[in-house]
Structure formats: structure tokens, C-alpha cells
Length: 356
Image (cartoon, rainbow, N blue to C red; front, side, top):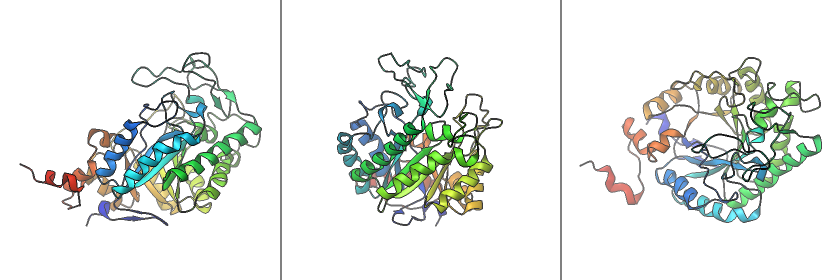
């Protein structure tokens, strides 16, 4: 059997294969509440037998949304629809996960298919953004407020209460979003974090916010698997880099993080990314093989043979896939065909195996 279709054993979960649906923002929420769009969007991947389905970046506070149409998990009323989503995903043999996030200075933006402009605080769909330092992502953006230390403690608490709600909603994977230039990553990157207190300057200070979030979230979990998504590099001179990421991941493993989901970039506009198939895999390779933590690879992975090669080369323990699932929600079926594997399909779809 191919490695891609062997189970991935975590401490308290077993993924039926090593294909994970990566979080993909849908910009289709209503005041932070999920809709039937999210049920169908995420449910189709579970029907298609993905090992795990990770819900999009879900804001821990209203000002943490990338756009006004993002999902949130800052109040109890939001839990009901999430329970429906997680129940359906589990019914199909997949593992439901959620990515807890705060967009920081990249918040208060429009839906990307309209434009990517940031709203000013006084505009209808806008609000004041926050960050470790008062540096805007784009020169035309309204600068964020630099968080005070008491405010930082409040945001740590927001992640804690969001994790409580995620557990109540039935998610079995809780992923902290420390990548793509959002708030946690903003603290990590010396290009964004210009603080001179206990949360800025040295490596130890820049990782403090993330470690405090982990310490706050862990007591709220029972059997849930705690993951962290990282941007392994800023792709910019003097930015956050792979050496610091490896060092961080070794610490995260010691703190009980079970999985590192490895992406890159998104922090600064001056990034220079050589996007090509598998371009982010070498970062997962280093993290996996230098720290021994369970590691996922992402980025332009588009077919079963490519995914299998990554696993066979011991560069990652699983693959996280996004755009390929948008093109084909039953990507797992196709990957099995690529590798001449026979897998069970949903009973309702079995007759589709017969090509006529």
C-alpha cells in the first residue's frame, strides 16, 4: 500500500489517510456565524474521504477577522452551527479541525473577489486593527494600534475561550494560526515586531505571545490534538527564517504540540516567493527531521503521485491541500486512482467508480 493511504496515528485520533484539507477562508459568514455554505463546503471533503478537514481561520474576537464575512468563535451562539458541521464530518469517517486565528494588522479588509482594500475604522465594514507594533501592512492602510501588555493578556484569553467553544462544538483538532502574517506571526517576525519590552527584540521575547496562548489553551483540551501552523520563512531579508522556525518547533514539541503544519510567507509585502510545485516542502523536511515532530507539508501539491513522493522521501508525515480540493472536492478519490489504490467511497457514490 502507498504511504499516502496508510493511517496517521495521533495520540487520540487516527486519520484514515494522510491527506488533510487545509483551512480555506470562504468569506461567507454572517457576523461571525457559519451558514449552510460552510456545512456543504466542508462536508463535501469528508464525503470525499479526506483524513481530516480543517475549518478556515476562525476569529477569536470580532476584530480578528480578515474580513467582515469571516467566521468567528467569540460567542456561544456561534457553536450551534459548528456542532452540525463537526457531526457531519465525523459521520463520514473524517476528523474535524478548526484553525483559531486573529488577523492583527491584516484585518478589516474587503472580500477578495471585490478587492483587497482595507476598510478604515469609521467605514461601515471597518474597525481599528491591532498588532505588536504600529506598522501598517501596506502604506495606504490605517496603522494598527500597538497592543499594550494588558491588552496582550486579553488576546491570550480570547484564544483560551475560543478553544473552550471549539471543544464544545466537537472539533478534534485545534490548530493555532501562527502563519501568513496574522497576529501571532506578527509577533514572531522582527520585520513587524519592533517592540522593546518582554514581547519584542530577542527570539525568546518574540515567541512569548504564542507560548502564552499555548499555555492558556492546553488546559481547555481533553482528547483534542493541538496543532500549530507556521510560516517557516518571511521570504524577506532579516525576517523570520527557517532556523528560527526549527528552534521554535523544538520548543513547541516540548510543550506538547502534536503537529506542525508548515507553510511560508504572508508577513510582509516585500516578500519574494519562488512559487513552484512543492516549493514549501523543504521547510517541512527540515522541521520534521531536525525536531522529530509530526509535520505536514503544503503548497502546490496537486496529485497523488507528488504527495506520495513527499511522504516516501520522509519529507513530511502528511500533506495539507487547499486549491486542488477546490478544483476537485473528491481529490482523495483521484489520488487513490493515481496510485492504483482501492479505497471505500461513500455508499451513495459507489456507483461512480464504474467508468462508462
